[in-house]
Image 1 (cartoon, rainbow, N blue to C red):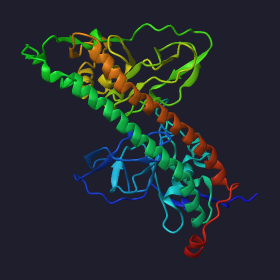
Image 2 (cartoon, rainbow, N blue to C red; image 1 turned 120 degrees about the horizontal axis):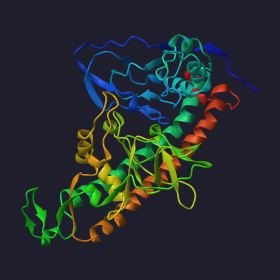
Image 3 (spheres, rainbow, N blue to C red; image 1 turned 90 degrees about the vertical axis):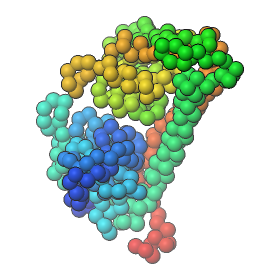
Image 4 (tube, rainbow, N blue to C red; image 1 turned 45 degrees about the vertical axis):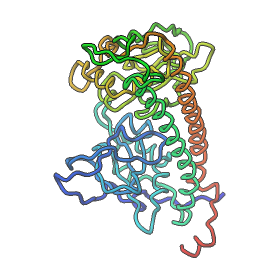
Length: 411
């Protein structure tokens, strides 16, 4: 069985290399929450004036060094088409040495046990704030195939990542369509037939005749009672499994007990604690097993369930910027651990139609969009599982990647 020679990682990469950035100049910024486990690339979502933090260049690999981010797999390659940037102080930056290592291969190595296991074992510090030692990471022994073979390995594994990224874009488009429809019908009040309805002035603003002002609680159930037995193993959804930009929720863990929030398929999980609320963590529960499709999860979720309105309405409302700002303003508690209050969140003001017909029409249109998004998400999970099975076999060498004749000539 052919295996690749082993070399210390520091011979292939520069660890936390220097990146020339100017103080008080705005650059792309990457926060820890921007990294999604299983997703290859991370893109900057904001610009900030340079302060402290890790500095990096396009195609560098960012490896989370703090618990539980490292254990959860927060490892990503910074946008190859981006610009020099900086980010969280909790990143270890890996930059491929030119002519020796391929940036895509280095990202694959960072995902492998050859780097992750020694990094995790090196963690030290106060409980809950332990950090990996970059010096230990630098000395980790890793497979070192030829540059041509590195590129072929990165290409094969990258094909899976590219398909997952395409799926993610499809999911984003589907959700944007559902949310745009929600905003058009229930916020801008341009619902089907609105042109034939008289608009009346009210103290809270113009409203179609027959409609009235109410609250989210008039339409939805907040933290409804859901029976989850204490005995036996059940699906458990931690906060880390909730996406910041889409309705997708990573595969649940399996735990005993029933302490925490309780929910069922079709419920929306709304993060109520800082910074998860501000970062957009909101998920739509799908695919829980069993006839009742029930589970439990983090105590920091507000569970929103359809009442007069349905699951699609509930999720789209939870993504509405005005609703999220209303929730943020209701937060209270010690600095760094502030929480939105369910009672206050449920008091969000919204216009309510005289009958349920509009809600039913919305569900018929929007629910299939969100259901398709969920199915695409399952497809991506299967792709990621296949990639993760293949990765160690390619990295260590048992599966040979034959270079093309042209690659041999270049090498």
